[in-house]
Length: 276
Image 1 (spheres, rainbow, N blue to C red):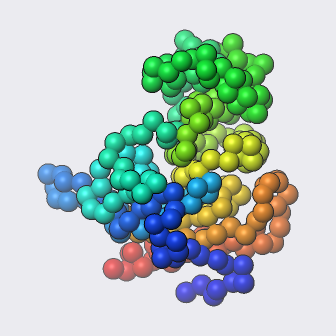
Image 2 (cartoon, rainbow, N blue to C red; image 1 turned 90 degrees about the horizontal axis):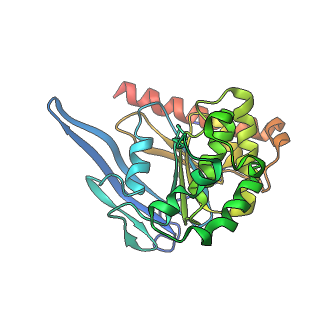
């Protein structure tokens, strides 16, 4: 078992239960297949306060995306319940935003039109969102590229467009599922800095899935560690760095210590899972 470092702060599920913006309460997900039941998520139980940036880390295939899909109303839990503002989530919500690994931009539309696409599909008045689209594109350095098509952009620029699109309807919650995993290392570092800077401006509640521990620590207020399938959350770690986040914090000894601690938590959870 890891020794408890001085910086370590965790959140108990008993902390302010019922007062949080988002509450995941003993959630399970089992898929019925011809070869038997597949237990994807077991007893997920945590709360997220409004404005928190929370990352989920864990082995590939451990159920991170399944858990996010249930929070987003895209899948139904087998057991437990998920509440937002005290009300159960039973279907996708218009006040949630989504960003995926593939930016899934429409190739025939301009950057600006791609950002505004959710507004059109929800049959809202596009003119009411032009100012917000401009603000987001300026914050992400894309305003001068507003008339370009996706094929004319780099991979990092396309993901910035996808993030702007996820934010255009002023969502209460933004869910990001490995949005930078397909990018090269240098571009990925740039995107982490860009997202951290953007977050200082928009300050939305966020759930972020990543396989990069360093990325999770750099971006997040809290990091939740998940085990291999059937996944459980074995650690809920507060990141003790103030905002705004700056690149040089990754050179600090404390940053590396936190990353090593999370890595050990993942490895210990894996060893326990294998020995069962």
